[in-house]
Length: 316
Image (cartoon, rainbow, N blue to C red):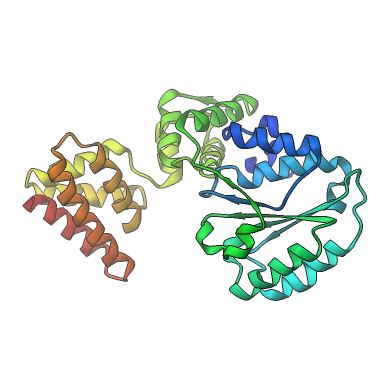
């Protein structure tokens, strides 16, 4: 029986030239690989934009078959205390690299989850072992990395992937997996992923497990998201003063798609921006959306808050 491999791992590029998006950053990384002159690096950007993929591709090109001996990957979400810096990193940094490079790499993923004490210990470790070890950190928020570490690193800032780049990834995988995917389904993945390649690939793999022919309906079903036009219909119905009808449409979204309150309010926000109404009205609606989103985050009953938001739209 063939072992199951998540498509995120199966289609992870092993060369920087294969990475989709961020051409300027990958060119700079390729130049560093060519000269084998790599400083400490800090990669900053939203989830699923290619930070980890780029570094792993760079490590494959640098170390080849010696990857296991010369590359240590740690995730700060799991190992975030000072002991990791003092033990694991120091033990790895002390040893001599076995590849044809003069240094090894320690890659610390999600470094913004490191405790303050661990970050303070890390900055000294980075200095002490700089001769034979390069530290590469990735983070979603640079503000959570202390300034002394930032000043020791060359900073690479990643942005979300564009819709055309998400489309390229989806089409490439669909072709290699011999999937039939229609244009509406591709657009649905672009909408759901919001520039996150992980979301896009997982959504595609989930839909492919149901059928080799992927349609828009399967994409929304597997992702527990509603079609944009259904959310727009609910908003417009409420704005016409038809509260009961809008409430019934809300029932359909939450029961049929299994959406929670935060998912619904997030989609309402996205669709309000697209509505063909004066900006003055949009401002008032977004103000109300922010208020009810805050209430739900603070623990208020989500169903009551969503119906109250629809009531506010009816009044507006």
